[in-house]
Each structure stands twice: as C-alpha cells, then as structure tokens.
Amino acid sequence: MALLADTEPCVRCCTMPEARHPEHELYDSEERFRLLVQSVVDYAIFMLDPGGRIVSWNAGAERIKGYAAHEIIGRHFSVFYPPDDIAADKPGTELELAVADGRLEDEGWRLRRDGTRFWANVVITALYDADGSLRGFGKVTRDMTERRSAERALDERGRLLSHLIRAQEAERQRIAWDVHDDTIQAMVAFGMRVQLIADRLPAEHAEAMSRLGDTVSATIDRLRDLTFRLHPPELDHSGLPEALSTYLAHVVAEAGLTWELRHDLRREPSPEIAITVYRICQEALTNVLKHARASSVTVSLSADDQGLLVGVADDGVGPSPDAPGRREHFGLIEMRERAELAGGWWSMEAAPGGGTIVRFWLPTPPSEASAERYLPR
Amino acid sequence: MSTPRGRHTVLIGDDQPMIRDIVREVLEAEPDLAVVAMAGDADEAIRLAERHRPAVAILDVRMPRGGGAHAAREIRRCSPLTRVMAFSAYGDSAVVEEMRLAGAAEYLVKGVPNVAIVAAVRRLAALG
Image 1: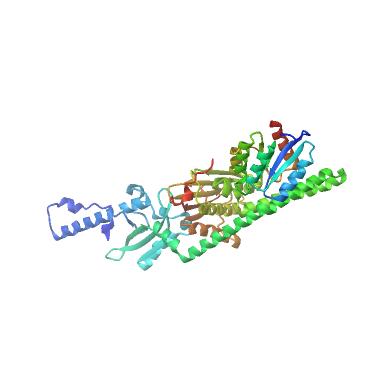
Image 2: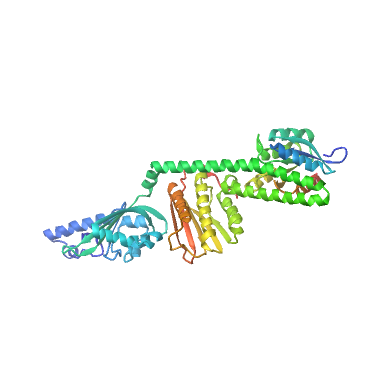
C-alpha cells in the first residue's frame, strides 16, 4: 500500500528507462496507479502517518478541502474537523478505532480551508507493513453535502418535524396578528377613553384616572412585546435584518448589553429561512443573556451563492465545560435541530478572544421565487 | 376646508369601530376641530374625502379594500388640499416609508397620548 505515498519519487523508473524487467513492469504499474489516485477528483485520497500527520494529497483532496498539497502535507488531519469534534477528540478516537478494527467509516461535517463546512463520508484504513507494524492510514473522503440535503428532504422524520415547525410558526403568526389587530386595538381605544375622561374630571379624580391610563399604556406595551416575541411584524414588513435589529434593540439593549448587527444581504431570504434564522438567533441571544455574563454581543449575517452564514458572538465567560442544564440543553438541541432540518449545520464554540460564538449556515436555493425580492433599504 | 364656524374638518378611516368612535370623541372635544366623515375601509375613505374635502384625513394603515397607502394616494389625488395622517398599530420602517411615499405627512403609532393626536391634526390643518 506504500504506492499511495506520492512523496517518494519513483527513482528506479527514471534510472532504468529502457529496462523492461518484470520488476520494472511492477514499478510502471505502481506509477500508473499513483497517477490514477493523484488525478481522481471526486474523492479526497490521502495518507496519514501513524500519528495522523498528512503525508500525501491528491487532486480530489485539493478540490474538496481547498488546500494545495504544499499547504497541508505535514499538518495533522484534525485540521479538517469542526471545533466541537476536536474538543471531543474525534480525530484521535477515529484513528484508534481504525487500528482496532482495521477500518473506520464515518459521516459528519468537516471543514474546508476557508472555514465552510461540507458533509463528508470518510473511510480510514489502517495500513501495515509485511512485518505487521503500522505504517499509517489511508483516508478516503467524499463530499456528500448535496446527497445529504436530498436525503434529508425526503426523510420522513424530517418532513414531519418541518411540518410541525411550519404549523407552529403559522399558529404563532395567527395569534400575534389577532392580538395585534384586535386586543391591542381594544386596549388603545380603552386608553384613549380613560384619557378623555381624565381630562373632564376635577383634579382630585383626574390623578387616579391618569394612573389608570398609565396602566393601560403599560399593558399595551406588554401586549406589543408578546406579539413581537410570538412573531415579529418586522419579519413580514421589513425583512430579517430589521427584525433582528429590533429584537437586539428591545431585548438585548434592555438587558444592558451593547450590540452590533453586521450584514451583507442583498436580498431577503425565503420566509421559511428568515424565520429559522430569527428563531435560532433568538435562542442564542436568550442563552447569552442567561448564561454568558457578557457585556456585548455581535450578530453577523453573510450571504454566499449557496447559503447564509450567521454568527452570534459574545464577550462573556465562554461555553460551560460542565454538563449543561436540562433547559439549556433543550435550547441547544432545538437550535441544531432547526438548522439541520433546513439542510444546514449549527455549532457552538469558544470564541477566539473569549466568550462564546454560535455559528450556523442554512442553504438558500436561488430558485426560490421569494429569494428574488430585494431588501428595502 | 373649514366649517362655517371656522373649525378644521377631519375624516377618520379605520376598520375598527372602537378606534373610529374614540378618535372622533377626542377630536370633537376640541373647539377648533370637527369630524365630518368616518370610513371603515379604503374605498369609503376615498369616496368621503372626495365629497367632504376635509382638511385632514386620519388613515389606518391596514384597512380593507386597498389599505391606508392606497387611500392616501387617491385622497391626495382627488382632494389635493387634504393632508394625510397615518394612524397605525405598526411602527416599523417599511410601513412608515410606504405611507410616506403614499403622501402621508404625519405618522402616529396607536397608543400615543390623545394630546399628540390633537397636536398632529392641528399641525396638518395649519399647513392647508
């Protein structure tokens, strides 16, 4: 299996070009096989030394993972794993399992050179010398992102869950509209009438009536807050960035944190993607307020041709190394579940400068008609 | 644009009768303001504005039959001296911008004190 290693030049082929010995035929065949492996573009095929450092690289690896051979050879293969996998020592465990069982197959998110993710099918094979000593590992990786999206779209459980989420969002929207267009209007009329009466009463009674008016105003504010939490009207009228900045201004600023929203969206995502982004951000920001002890939070939205990458970063105490509490745990599961149902991924990790960063990516198919709607300025 | 007694005339367009009635009472309590018409949808508001040529039209944004923006645009066309004030339960920028483009000179979010409504109506009537 040493033929997979392209770091050793085929010296004998070059020094004995005219010889046609059986041994040379073998090297010829090895060279052809090496060229085949090197030029395969659909699979990343490369070798690791026994410690997990990369010793060979092919065209498919460069295409799928984005590294040129000179950038990656010599580095540890854990560079391809997301931070939460590294924290759980998944790379090390996978090598141990490959040694124990001869081979290991896994599917999961892996990182490209630019930090974006792809859904990988990975086979790691332990490679032994004739004398039985471990020479290293052969690693074959396929980019399964498209197939996974298609499979998830057809998956029964996924269909049921996204149907439930859609039904839940539709119900929340209906309740929000009812409260907004009926209950709040009635309270507004009530408040105006109280003010009118207060204006006509002698001073000693006007004071009490004015306090009643204040209570009505406070109730209207609370009802508006309720509708806003149920389904922000900005999401329907003004788009995702304004809905998020309104949420940050209301909820995050009122809790005493400074906030920033950065985005480079040129068009509004589909309503389904917009509400998914909004809900995950809402949950992530709730976690920041409850657990992070942060003083500032930054939400960023950046679009590419295929999707929308979102970050929620705070400057607090960082993710808890302890087992999370049940409530928090459900919040994390819900965020991940929502992102994955939409065909994307979700992660939570320690931010480089301290604090926590929640990042997630959702695909935004360009064929969706609503994606063509440009955001109002 | 004023009644014989010199009061500024006002049209109220809102699909909520409770809101129409209380806005009328608040304005009628002022000696210089008179409500001359009340409409429950956009078409009715346009028709009544054409007939009464009020100094001020107070329009809800989410009204049946075309909404406040449609009503504002048509009222500005058929009664150019009528000034439009949007009176809405929504305050987000896209809605405010939509009404501004339709010709609304004031935008009040429902829940503001009565004195703010009266002051805005007087400001608009003074422009006429």
